[in-house]
Length: 400
Image (cartoon, rainbow, N blue to C red; front, side, top):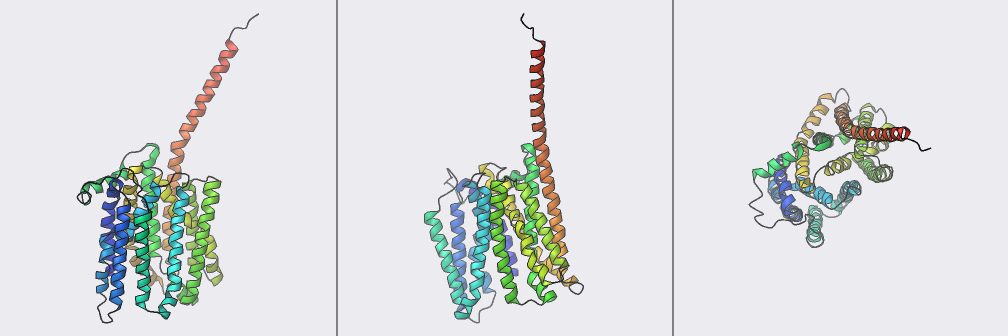
């Protein structure tokens, strides 16, 4: 817990500075350095596993390379920024969905076979495989991933990193005045994503809840969780393609639908009295997969190209920083209500999803207010021009 908390805080600090810096000097150097940090940490863990009597505190030392290079917060920020750089408004949403789907599939590919590999081999083999995967990622990124920032600066890279102007620029992206209420929309979207990640980070008690209330085993939960992830991934692809690409449903409406889907899922978990209700939740939850990619697509479409890194640094820093307190809060609620009903903590998630619905409702309202007047005025102008032309024709002298 200490290792995770300290690492998360330091990663957030790096993330705050790295976004504005990468807008000027490029995304690729950060991604490569970050992957090298993960690789070195994985190698150190392999070495640690060869010594049975070493204190667990040495694991904190093993995590130093990945922490000092920004951790997952920085890697996530850079990849999202890279995709925003290399995509258009037409294909950005689908790319965001693909990215999050790949994360889900990758997690499954690692989680499902890892226990079997461990039983057949050892800890050294498990972490050795992880180190090899990181090395492959470094090599692939170095040789095959082009830089996405055009005309990236090359001078004084190190000296321009830890300067307060980077933080000021990051904050300005969110608070500077923009036309069509974009500033308010961006701030609301930052809030939506922050609350959403807070729920995801805190809501890790599903197995304990199902074991306590329905007597589930870890094997049963693993199978259920895997099926849920597959349904989630397939649903995100189909929903994005059909609703967004084909039917042209806007990002904000899809976010609203996703929030309602997740709210209903939380209520089902809270009210469930049988396994059948739990088995139905993946189908209800399926559109919740749209929330994160659609919010990121919406905000990236509202800022200039050179502001993308700053914006996602702000978003991801907020997510990871507030996410630190999510686990303790949910655990506290779960422990306090366990004797009454193991599922009562789900009402906390439901309430937060309700808050997200209010925020995305405000976004939709702002978008309507900024677009409707223009349309009305255009229609009035056309009608007045048409009336004037008709009146002129009726009053014009006729020849005999």
